[in-house]
Image 1: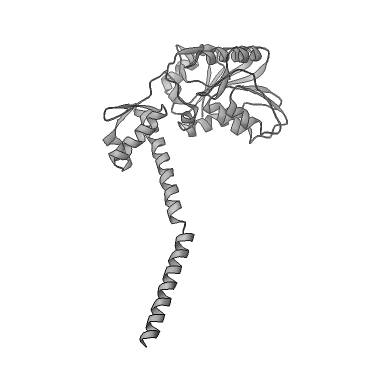
Image 2: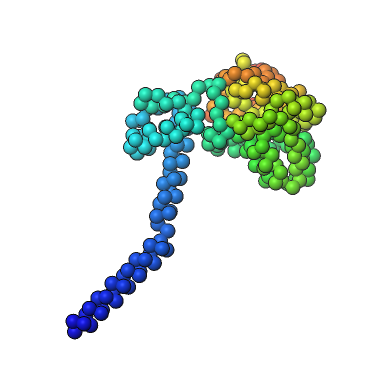
Length: 292
């Protein structure tokens, strides 16, 4: 009897060990949990930037309480965001990056994304089959390029200086992509400089979709980069209609380089959170404003 019990115990142990081994090999729990943790980190940091965009500043204890995480976790988030240029670290918290500071395009894509998509949909509704349009560099104009891929035109000429936009347009079978030469600038993922200006000056466009880092009714449309401002001015000169596409966070924001006066715009497409007083002033200057 003792021998039979020992055999049964040994077989039972083997079966349990084999089951545990199969479970360890097949169970997806650990990878899924890790994937969810990574997603939550990205979402939290995105929301931190949204809070800073609204309030301008935040403290570590406030953020920790808001997101129900430790202060050490928040400090790690702020350090990671500061490394990208998204914010400025202060003693005990963070500030939104100063106006005039150029942000990497990878960061800009994460800010006000829903608003940019709505603006892009409104912008695409303006485009007609057979037109020649210019898509300036920027995350809102990049959303316009994505929306174009959903349209059913027979033909469209698209001029752009932005590499990310060019990649999207190149995949649209009925669109003809036109890219001027120039010097590449990583912060905006775009070309600029004398070669680009010379090439643009020899073209004509029905419609320009112009991005902006700042749009002030009194000062005008602005960008942090002088060479891109000069190239944008060339784009305006060759376009029959100039459409500025900018989410409401860009309004009343000033920057280093002036592209054009507000009066040179035909249309501004922004979002419904735009300050009514600013919208009224832009309209008073003869510019149509649409709220997406």
